Length: 408
Length: 194
Image (spheres, rainbow over the protein chains, first blue to last red):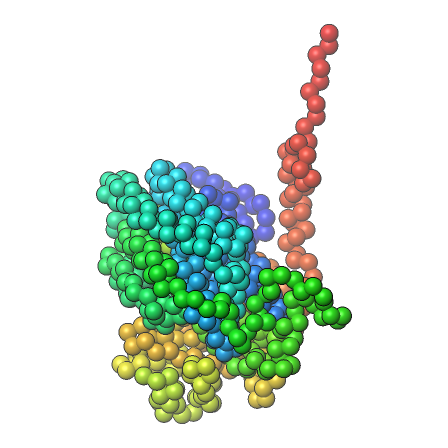
């Protein structure tokens, strides 16, 4: 018996005639981390078919970007993965710099590496908090938010925003770091390793945690590659693929760190990978602080792409305080090259790629965003099939998806 | 292997399919005919010294407003990467204006499923042999393909489902839902008579 509520949409009601039934999870479900709908076909508690539906947050970023200048598009990247906006900004800037051949001074590269890794810790903390909450460990949630709060305060100190930063700019960063910021960050780094141990004492060998994660959501390395999984989801299956090592950008080639690998490919392996990554991020930030060189924070060939800290006192007629630089660039220096380029960076969720086509204009002719969350949700059907419905929540959590990035 | 060397080997293997290849910012790309795209990608994936095992991105491009001469209306772009050998190549398959279609590569990479659905959704490029070619980001009853260059930024008309959605809001209104955000449409309780 079904009751239609809208076109192509029927709510099945259990009629007691058979064990198979379909269930619609979401879009307003707390464990989907955003507006994700999953249409399930169940046999008892086993998932027979799983169809994720996305698009509720589609804002047309790719179309918008074609109508905005390169500098204007930066703020859209904040709204992709809003949990790690800094890493998205860095990814976008690195891609545009490669496309237009802009050089970045060393100090800015170090600062960007530092903030991207802070962002990674933030994202992993939020992931651990909500993932643990989803599968029944409430305490970890509060512990993780305690440390995340310190990082958000640091971001606020750095650029005034806590979630949507737009701090990295094409050709550099917006402002230099202050001594106070470095001191506070150092204080955080001093306590953070012991805090990670605290989380581990709570769940690492917890029997319930192990029962819910070990052997669940298994993906082999080959399957993970074929499905397009990246980030900790791929490394949990034992494939050594980290863009920070494979195609180093910013200061990643100059710092020393390891890429943690799992072998089992289950939820527990992905969890261990992310925990180790937090240790490595902490190492990277420490090295960035120690090695931070003096110098300018934006490149000589792209000063006009970095927004001025102060608005100019006098604005010429017919120009726009922030837009003049961009107009000048095309006319005077012909910095806008034609051609296409694909540049990917390692964001907390996986491989964030930007495919640009430039036709010499001050706007991208085409910008495609390869968002890891979109591909991970696409892979959910293959991973969750045949497993129990209760493990679907654990699977969604361990893939670490953000719907803002998936739907763009 | 050098990026251009891969492109040259590709040309030697498929002389009739490769239209031209070029290098941009250190990245090599080959422009190919769409007919044997699955064969080309399978060759790139399985050949021992190339082994492009990671499909990084798959997207469509509408060339309608590009100034370069000799481009087809649509393109499907595959960005490939080899994790063991650490090299990359881009394959651009030309797709015509009338009934744009190309073969699906889901058999090579199951992960291409959603990427092809997205390209179909936003560009209207049809993928032959695709197991489940439906819109993915937009509603099923959406009209048009927004990333085409002739589709205006503001859209063409209101989405048909909007009327239905508003009707739903009005229906929920019966239960005290007030779109203006007043206190659930409650009336003040009547005072007891003295």
